Length: 251
Image 1 (spheres, rainbow, N blue to C red):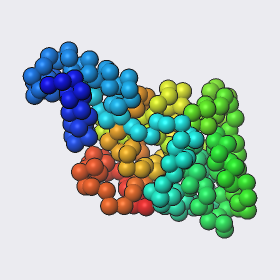
Image 2: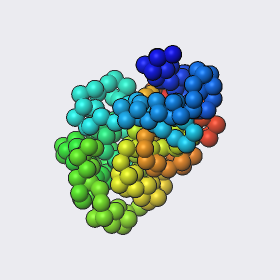
Image 3: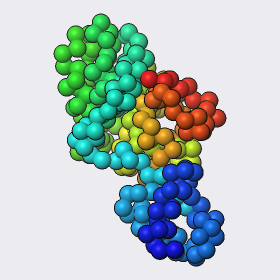
């Protein structure tokens, strides 16, 4: 089997099974485990999978920069945003994480809603400038340009002073093995802090994030309270989340 054929089979296996065990796969294709591990390293460098101990998981496709993700704005994100907006209650103090799906949530908050939105995302804050009933508090810090959010010590210090009724978290991957993940360690740390300060953590997840993984863990899956998902997803895709008894809301 040619290297290109073997790599294509690796990616197909990940797509179908959600994980790949290097030792087992090497036996299936009758090559050494070292050869498969080399293939995995090369595919990981190309961003096509996420290496883990003993094998690999599907890589999240939600790793492009903010501008690229915004250009790929989809009906699914709009639907998730509307569903997320409906979960915010009058009088709540809510932290809205950065991300293109949460931008859709901000756009669809009811005009009559009275609430406080705290965010470290300039994109979210701008969406709420003309909302008559929303008080906006902006968390400052060093701008993480990939996601257009503030991070760092000053951000953490400000966040630690507030208790939130709900946190709408952004993430790039949700997998039963790795939990909730993202692509940057400092951003992951800020998300963990916000979750600790929040009574409830809610995730709006497009299909490609389910069963995918990125490099840095934010939290275990079972610490997510509510998962807002696209309608009519395959039952096998949702099985790990059902098993953890995560509350799932279809958009």
